[in-house]
Length: 272
Image (cartoon, rainbow, N blue to C red; front, side, top):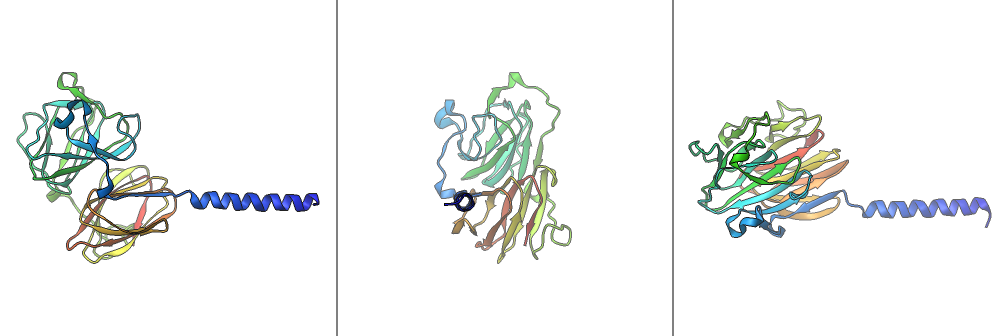
Protein backbone atom coordinates (compact mmCIF):
# COMPACT_ATOMS: atom_id res chain seq x y z
CA UNK A 1 0.00 0.00 0.00
CA UNK A 2 1.41 3.41 -0.99
CA UNK A 3 1.78 6.26 1.48
CA UNK A 4 -1.10 8.08 -0.24
CA UNK A 5 -3.45 5.11 0.17
CA UNK A 6 -2.30 4.61 3.77
CA UNK A 7 -3.00 8.26 4.57
CA UNK A 8 -6.42 8.11 2.91
CA UNK A 9 -7.38 4.93 4.77
CA UNK A 10 -6.23 6.39 8.08
CA UNK A 11 -8.20 9.61 7.50
CA UNK A 12 -11.36 7.67 6.59
CA UNK A 13 -11.06 5.41 9.64
CA UNK A 14 -10.50 8.40 11.93
CA UNK A 15 -13.50 10.18 10.44
CA UNK A 16 -15.79 7.18 10.91
CA UNK A 17 -14.57 6.70 14.47
CA UNK A 18 -15.08 10.37 15.28
CA UNK A 19 -18.59 10.32 13.78
CA UNK A 20 -19.49 7.19 15.72
CA UNK A 21 -18.30 8.66 19.00
CA UNK A 22 -20.13 11.96 18.38
CA UNK A 23 -23.38 10.19 17.47
CA UNK A 24 -23.29 8.21 20.71
CA UNK A 25 -22.57 11.30 22.82
CA UNK A 26 -26.02 12.58 23.79
CA UNK A 27 -26.37 16.29 24.44
CA UNK A 28 -29.73 16.06 26.21
CA UNK A 29 -31.18 14.43 29.28
CA UNK A 30 -34.73 13.74 30.46
CA UNK A 31 -35.82 12.82 34.01
CA UNK A 32 -39.45 11.79 34.55
CA UNK A 33 -40.91 12.64 37.96
CA UNK A 34 -41.90 9.00 38.55
CA UNK A 35 -38.27 7.87 38.21
CA UNK A 36 -36.75 10.23 40.79
CA UNK A 37 -34.85 8.71 43.73
CA UNK A 38 -35.46 10.58 46.99
CA UNK A 39 -33.21 11.27 49.95
CA UNK A 40 -33.22 13.86 52.76
CA UNK A 41 -32.50 17.58 52.46
CA UNK A 42 -30.81 17.47 55.87
CA UNK A 43 -29.70 13.86 56.44
CA UNK A 44 -28.77 14.58 60.07
CA UNK A 45 -32.48 15.14 60.87
CA UNK A 46 -33.61 11.95 59.15
CA UNK A 47 -37.40 11.64 58.82
CA UNK A 48 -37.80 15.13 60.36
CA UNK A 49 -36.11 16.57 57.30
CA UNK A 50 -37.90 17.40 54.03
CA UNK A 51 -37.31 14.91 51.25
CA UNK A 52 -34.90 15.98 48.49
CA UNK A 53 -33.71 14.80 45.10
CA UNK A 54 -31.16 16.41 42.78
CA UNK A 55 -32.40 16.85 39.20
CA UNK A 56 -29.00 18.16 38.10
CA UNK A 57 -25.76 19.04 39.86
CA UNK A 58 -24.88 17.89 43.39
CA UNK A 59 -26.11 19.87 46.39
CA UNK A 60 -23.34 18.47 48.61
CA UNK A 61 -20.49 19.95 46.54
CA UNK A 62 -19.35 23.37 45.32
CA UNK A 63 -21.47 23.45 42.19
CA UNK A 64 -24.73 24.84 40.88
CA UNK A 65 -27.65 22.47 41.51
CA UNK A 66 -31.36 22.13 40.85
CA UNK A 67 -33.35 19.89 43.16
CA UNK A 68 -36.85 18.91 44.21
CA UNK A 69 -37.82 19.29 47.88
CA UNK A 70 -41.04 17.92 49.38
CA UNK A 71 -42.65 18.77 52.71
CA UNK A 72 -45.35 17.16 54.83
CA UNK A 73 -48.50 19.15 55.63
CA UNK A 74 -47.90 21.23 58.76
CA UNK A 75 -44.12 21.29 58.39
CA UNK A 76 -42.45 24.39 59.83
CA UNK A 77 -38.71 24.73 60.23
CA UNK A 78 -37.08 26.41 63.19
CA UNK A 79 -35.46 29.79 62.38
CA UNK A 80 -32.22 29.24 60.49
CA UNK A 81 -29.93 30.57 57.76
CA UNK A 82 -28.20 29.09 54.73
CA UNK A 83 -24.62 29.53 53.64
CA UNK A 84 -25.71 30.24 50.06
CA UNK A 85 -28.59 32.01 48.29
CA UNK A 86 -31.33 29.86 46.80
CA UNK A 87 -34.44 30.26 44.64
CA UNK A 88 -37.68 28.36 45.08
CA UNK A 89 -40.67 27.70 42.83
CA UNK A 90 -43.82 26.05 44.19
CA UNK A 91 -44.84 22.98 42.19
CA UNK A 92 -47.56 21.68 44.51
CA UNK A 93 -49.19 22.73 47.77
CA UNK A 94 -48.88 25.95 49.77
CA UNK A 95 -45.54 27.31 50.93
CA UNK A 96 -44.45 30.12 53.26
CA UNK A 97 -40.88 31.48 53.46
CA UNK A 98 -40.14 34.65 55.42
CA UNK A 99 -38.71 36.21 58.55
CA UNK A 100 -39.51 34.25 61.74
CA UNK A 101 -41.92 36.96 62.96
CA UNK A 102 -43.75 37.45 59.64
CA UNK A 103 -47.39 36.46 59.24
CA UNK A 104 -47.97 33.49 56.97
CA UNK A 105 -48.36 34.26 53.28
CA UNK A 106 -49.18 30.95 51.61
CA UNK A 107 -47.77 30.76 48.09
CA UNK A 108 -49.49 28.33 45.66
CA UNK A 109 -48.23 26.55 42.53
CA UNK A 110 -46.17 28.78 40.25
CA UNK A 111 -45.09 31.20 42.99
CA UNK A 112 -41.41 32.16 43.14
CA UNK A 113 -39.12 33.28 45.93
CA UNK A 114 -35.47 33.98 46.68
CA UNK A 115 -33.73 33.40 50.01
CA UNK A 116 -30.43 35.32 50.44
CA UNK A 117 -27.47 33.68 52.11
CA UNK A 118 -27.24 34.61 55.79
CA UNK A 119 -30.87 35.85 56.07
CA UNK A 120 -32.75 34.48 59.10
CA UNK A 121 -36.05 32.82 58.09
CA UNK A 122 -38.46 29.95 58.50
CA UNK A 123 -40.09 27.73 55.88
CA UNK A 124 -43.55 26.20 56.29
CA UNK A 125 -45.91 24.03 54.24
CA UNK A 126 -49.71 23.87 54.42
CA UNK A 127 -50.94 21.76 51.49
CA UNK A 128 -51.85 18.08 51.54
CA UNK A 129 -48.81 17.59 49.29
CA UNK A 130 -46.05 20.18 49.09
CA UNK A 131 -43.32 20.15 46.46
CA UNK A 132 -40.89 22.83 45.29
CA UNK A 133 -38.05 23.21 42.84
CA UNK A 134 -35.02 24.67 44.63
CA UNK A 135 -32.01 26.06 42.77
CA UNK A 136 -28.56 27.23 43.87
CA UNK A 137 -25.70 28.75 41.85
CA UNK A 138 -23.01 27.31 44.12
CA UNK A 139 -22.86 24.79 46.93
CA UNK A 140 -22.81 22.96 49.13
CA UNK A 141 -26.32 23.64 50.43
CA UNK A 142 -26.02 23.87 54.22
CA UNK A 143 -28.27 24.85 57.14
CA UNK A 144 -26.80 27.04 59.89
CA UNK A 145 -28.23 28.38 63.21
CA UNK A 146 -29.77 31.87 63.31
CA UNK A 147 -26.93 33.08 65.55
CA UNK A 148 -24.65 32.94 62.50
CA UNK A 149 -26.82 35.32 60.45
CA UNK A 150 -25.13 37.86 58.18
CA UNK A 151 -26.09 40.40 55.52
CA UNK A 152 -24.72 39.55 52.07
CA UNK A 153 -26.31 42.61 50.45
CA UNK A 154 -29.15 40.72 48.74
CA UNK A 155 -32.80 41.08 49.69
CA UNK A 156 -35.48 38.35 49.80
CA UNK A 157 -38.36 38.21 47.34
CA UNK A 158 -41.75 36.51 47.68
CA UNK A 159 -43.64 36.59 44.38
CA UNK A 160 -47.13 35.12 44.74
CA UNK A 161 -48.46 33.50 41.57
CA UNK A 162 -51.29 36.05 41.41
CA UNK A 163 -48.72 38.87 41.13
CA UNK A 164 -46.71 37.48 38.21
CA UNK A 165 -46.83 39.58 35.03
CA UNK A 166 -47.07 37.41 31.91
CA UNK A 167 -46.11 38.60 28.40
CA UNK A 168 -47.08 37.01 25.07
CA UNK A 169 -45.89 36.94 21.45
CA UNK A 170 -46.93 40.55 20.92
CA UNK A 171 -44.47 41.60 23.63
CA UNK A 172 -41.55 39.17 23.21
CA UNK A 173 -39.51 38.29 20.12
CA UNK A 174 -38.62 34.83 21.50
CA UNK A 175 -42.29 33.75 21.68
CA UNK A 176 -43.62 32.80 18.24
CA UNK A 177 -46.75 30.84 19.15
CA UNK A 178 -50.23 32.18 19.85
CA UNK A 179 -51.39 31.79 23.43
CA UNK A 180 -47.91 31.13 24.84
CA UNK A 181 -46.81 33.48 27.63
CA UNK A 182 -43.52 34.07 29.42
CA UNK A 183 -42.17 35.87 32.48
CA UNK A 184 -38.59 36.52 33.60
CA UNK A 185 -37.90 35.95 37.29
CA UNK A 186 -34.14 36.48 37.68
CA UNK A 187 -30.87 37.15 35.88
CA UNK A 188 -30.25 38.16 32.29
CA UNK A 189 -31.27 36.88 28.86
CA UNK A 190 -27.72 37.46 27.58
CA UNK A 191 -25.88 35.75 30.44
CA UNK A 192 -27.63 33.39 32.87
CA UNK A 193 -31.23 33.76 33.94
CA UNK A 194 -34.49 32.10 34.82
CA UNK A 195 -37.89 32.43 33.18
CA UNK A 196 -41.22 30.64 33.19
CA UNK A 197 -43.22 29.76 30.09
CA UNK A 198 -46.97 29.11 30.13
CA UNK A 199 -48.35 26.83 27.38
CA UNK A 200 -52.09 26.96 26.62
CA UNK A 201 -54.41 23.99 26.23
CA UNK A 202 -53.80 22.35 22.85
CA UNK A 203 -50.27 23.68 22.43
CA UNK A 204 -47.97 21.53 20.32
CA UNK A 205 -44.68 23.06 19.29
CA UNK A 206 -40.96 23.37 19.85
CA UNK A 207 -38.45 24.94 22.21
CA UNK A 208 -35.36 25.79 20.15
CA UNK A 209 -32.04 26.62 21.80
CA UNK A 210 -28.33 26.79 21.08
CA UNK A 211 -27.38 27.48 24.70
CA UNK A 212 -24.48 25.67 26.32
CA UNK A 213 -26.79 25.31 29.35
CA UNK A 214 -30.53 24.83 28.94
CA UNK A 215 -32.45 23.30 31.85
CA UNK A 216 -36.23 23.02 32.15
CA UNK A 217 -38.55 21.81 34.95
CA UNK A 218 -42.27 21.13 34.53
CA UNK A 219 -43.93 23.21 37.26
CA UNK A 220 -47.58 22.40 36.54
CA UNK A 221 -49.53 20.16 34.19
CA UNK A 222 -48.41 17.31 31.96
CA UNK A 223 -46.58 17.45 28.64
CA UNK A 224 -45.74 15.00 25.91
CA UNK A 225 -42.03 15.28 25.19
CA UNK A 226 -39.78 14.02 22.42
CA UNK A 227 -36.55 14.97 20.66
CA UNK A 228 -33.94 13.55 18.33
CA UNK A 229 -32.56 11.66 21.34
CA UNK A 230 -35.77 10.78 23.20
CA UNK A 231 -38.86 8.89 22.05
CA UNK A 232 -42.23 10.31 23.10
CA UNK A 233 -42.65 10.32 26.88
CA UNK A 234 -45.14 11.88 29.29
CA UNK A 235 -43.66 14.31 31.81
CA UNK A 236 -45.66 15.35 34.89
CA UNK A 237 -44.95 18.22 37.27
CA UNK A 238 -41.49 17.82 38.77
CA UNK A 239 -40.02 16.28 35.61
CA UNK A 240 -36.90 17.71 34.03
CA UNK A 241 -35.15 18.01 30.67
CA UNK A 242 -31.92 19.65 29.54
CA UNK A 243 -29.69 20.14 26.51
CA UNK A 244 -26.35 21.54 25.41
CA UNK A 245 -25.79 23.33 22.12
CA UNK A 246 -28.11 23.51 19.12
CA UNK A 247 -31.16 21.45 20.07
CA UNK A 248 -34.93 21.22 19.62
CA UNK A 249 -37.32 20.01 22.35
CA UNK A 250 -40.75 18.98 21.02
CA UNK A 251 -43.48 19.74 23.55
CA UNK A 252 -47.23 19.05 23.65
CA UNK A 253 -49.62 20.20 26.38
CA UNK A 254 -51.51 17.04 27.38
CA UNK A 255 -53.40 18.74 30.22
CA UNK A 256 -56.86 20.28 30.35
CA UNK A 257 -55.34 23.51 31.66
CA UNK A 258 -52.21 25.62 31.10
CA UNK A 259 -48.80 24.04 31.57
CA UNK A 260 -46.02 26.02 33.26
CA UNK A 261 -42.33 25.26 32.65
CA UNK A 262 -39.38 26.91 34.39
CA UNK A 263 -36.26 27.44 32.26
CA UNK A 264 -32.71 28.20 33.39
CA UNK A 265 -30.40 29.07 30.50
CA UNK A 266 -27.40 31.18 29.52
CA UNK A 267 -28.74 32.20 26.09
CA UNK A 268 -31.96 33.20 24.40
CA UNK A 269 -34.37 30.51 23.21
CA UNK A 270 -37.38 30.36 20.89
CA UNK A 271 -40.82 28.94 21.59
CA UNK A 272 -42.59 28.08 18.33
